Length: 218
Ligand code: MG
Image 1 (cartoon, rainbow, N blue to C red):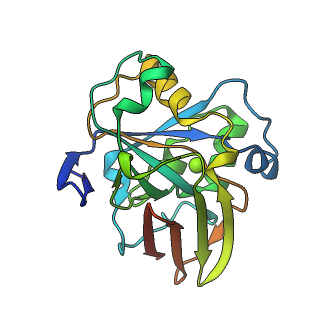
Image 2 (cartoon, rainbow, N blue to C red; image 1 turned 120 degrees about the vertical axis):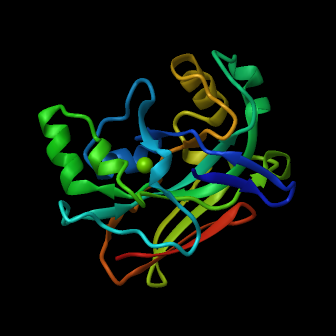
């Protein structure tokens, strides 16, 4: 069982599912040669994929190309089903930082065949996730800087203001398809600058005022 913590309030949630958006930043969609989708593209990582700050990403032997994607994570605090956009933020308990680890070579092969992405996106250790800050502590979740460095070299430097689908719409849209339960996590997509990481390297991800991750790769 994996838990999500909000240290400032002492709250702890058992994580159920991790619902992720793909192609939610136009520049990132372009860098992978994808079109900007008319509706959010969703996939799910199992809770077993989650690791915490300081834990190690282990690249599975069936991949030669593992990519980092830094993302703002949303923690759901209350049961939420087909919620209107105007009410959606009431269901958000906190914000954190995540890295959506992606086996790009495997994903590209699956995409070409029209097959699902789970083995490229949901493998063990594919979801480094920080602790959360209370939602009330973040004045504007659409004005957050996201950064990821590999061995101290800056690779991604984006801002949540560039999201295509914004948080109220994300929560509303997902809640029509999947009932969101307390402890569910949403990954909101990655800005441009994704790239490869290799065994022996160290990833550091940061959203100032939200969270920080320091994750070695093996
Ligand atoms: Mg992603």
